Length: 143
Image 1 (tube, one colour):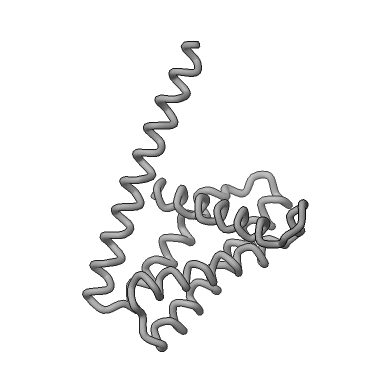
Image 2: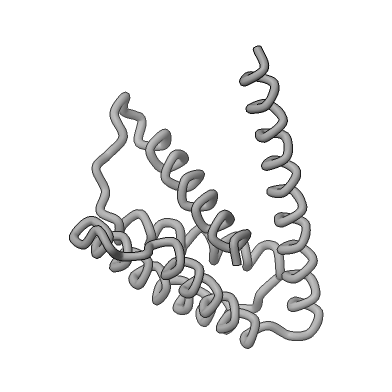
């Protein structure tokens, strides 16, 4: 669960940064959480189409699932701005888990295996990055 949220946050941060840089201006464009999440959903769909070799029907279905959860994530983000007691982390984890489950239902056995292998590799890489960051923090605190 923790890794799912980390992946989601990492994806959102990377996508937001990439979109801001693409604008060609010195200042990032002001975008609503829904606009950002919709861009993230499109990129996630594109990545899955490429990675899993989805057919047109699967691409449409995965795109719809990603968009559905993009809207829900944007609502969580907005509500967290309004209400300080909203547990964004747990809600995002829950949404991402539901999204993944819906996407997995759309895949055939081979695609599911590829998806799971890629997910495991991402989790291993994130853990490695966390360990490296912790090591740097410890080295910096000793200096």
